Image 1 (cartoon, rainbow, N blue to C red):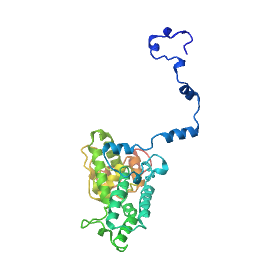
Image 2 (image 1 turned 180 degrees about the vertical axis):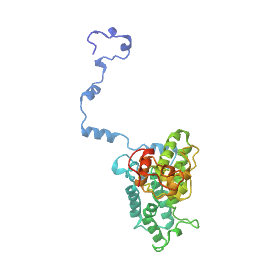
Image 3 (image 1 turned 30 degrees about the vertical axis):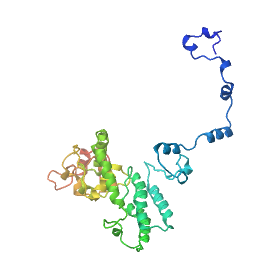
Length: 320
């Protein structure tokens, strides 16, 4: 290693403290560096390692537990109970449906009381769906369709007909199933409230507000009245826009303390004709036409001719 040095004393002082002659090195350690371990040896090493540190923890915490009744989850695929992938930028309909189907199939042929059914649904199934709500908004029609097998099974445990109205199992008179729509409203209100009032997320909140205002093509941030009148689908839009649509269905408006208005809301084209389709809105956006005075004369009696409309607006074809 040091061919120019014949003795340990010839080494630098910092090397003299850590240098060890090769005669004092254990031969088996040296052999391990040159010997390639086989698969069988690796398995033996793994098996010799302690598999479970939980008993030591329970003994330290003075907790009594039946070790034969549990199994620690690992990152091995076949040992995962929640082996359902959630795609952030993709649809989660299949994920939610798979969760409900797995839950329903595991209880369909079991004799259980309705109290146990309530516990399993409210404390196990709905929290799984609630986790997906952190990144996605479930449409109201899908909420009813999603829990239809659970409601049917719950009615069966109560000896009720399948045609029994759902408001019977969603009331405050006695322990019943939690309403997925109400649960989603609470979750989304909490998420949006944090996003809008957190100083760290101020820029993200402003971007979402402007994007939603651009989506509805309204000169001010839309309230629940404007959103409810709009026929634009929000299935493929942003999470914040979907939340605004959800809140509007419950007559809840978001009041921003940031002024993003471009003019008077009463002069907006959407205020006069809210039934624009996505294609119509895209055409207006390309031409940057948002107010009625961009299309009519000053006396507000007639539309501008094609030549004048083309001259004052941006580019693209004239909206139909």
